[in-house]
Length: 503
Image 1: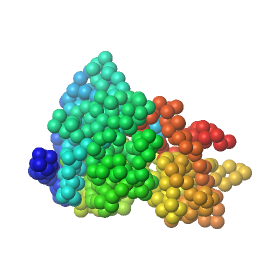
Image 2: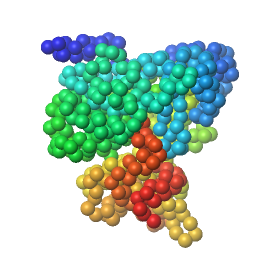
Image 3: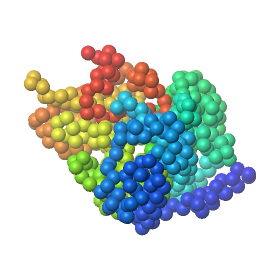
Image 4: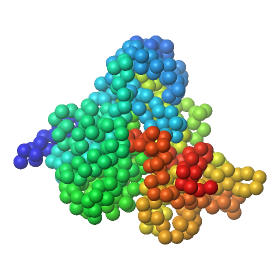
């Protein structure tokens, strides 16, 4: 009875303090307030003084006087913060550096994380997500069972006192004490920086727990579940955890894994709930239980701007009030920890403006345009999902790169895929995938017309564990680290192909 009362009180708390009002009117009003608040907050910092933020009168002043920034712009400021200087990017004390994966570029990034960032952005976004979920399903009772969470690690403590860690580990370290008891495994174990150490320990612990929800990146959960099944030999996840009902997922597109997870489960009322939380902020939550559109979180201390992805280097950014449905936008954020008009690298496309709903459709550094095809991640994900359904197969990991045109041969796309359940006829699978990709992207179809510039795509089947081994060699196992899906050069795929034993 106590647990039932706990859930009732929690539901009431969420409804009162995190009301799920996502109307356009409310969102625009909130964004206007956040813009003024963040600019005022940063105006006295070294960064704010250099950009004369205190002199700005309106948004147009801000847009016209502050450039769009990427991470390299902050190198000098980050070094000062690392050394212990105060009031450089933010007036708040920097407690942590959130370490991003940097898998594509090879260079990890350090994002300043303050108490304000933790509680008013990340945890606030978490509670908005829980509030939305509770409003969509009245039977949700997340406090009755354990939440199996997979996080990144805590890596080091600098001489300045700042801790370097993955954002997921930082959030675990700051989970409010009343909620600590619902998490499994322990904070100390799950934030250990060694993925191999965690994999062996976590599998044993969580297999014995009463797990009701799981949270994290799908690929890493599959690794743990594979480890558990090797030892326990369960058939369905609900044979192992009879109360398992919710998977909070993010970090990678879930579509390539949805069919496999559905087959792993043993109940029809299971909830897959997507959250869009990155090191730089918490941006979106799933809009409903029956669609994968995301609601833009406009009340988590982040001011948003959007640059049309087509020709985005030469186009002025627009605020939320000016976005249009159906146009891919590069996402810019301005935040209280000193990120000004910062390009996080994601491309989103709005599907609705009442309320503001969107899909993540790509990455600025994760697309392919080697032949004028402008291939987005969403094109590839959709084509793979439809092809996998037709051939009844499952994918674990994959990456795509162009094989360039030369004097002797036309170009083509190369897919390196590690299957959980491979197709019985890989050649037919490749032909179907090529057809689906043409349906998803008219530019690709045009280049494929009569093999004008491109020949049919090529599938290379990866050995089991190939991508895991590659990440291990890069020192990037676990945590926020992900396989680059679309790469506009051949460096990564050639490393993987060589590791795979292909010539």
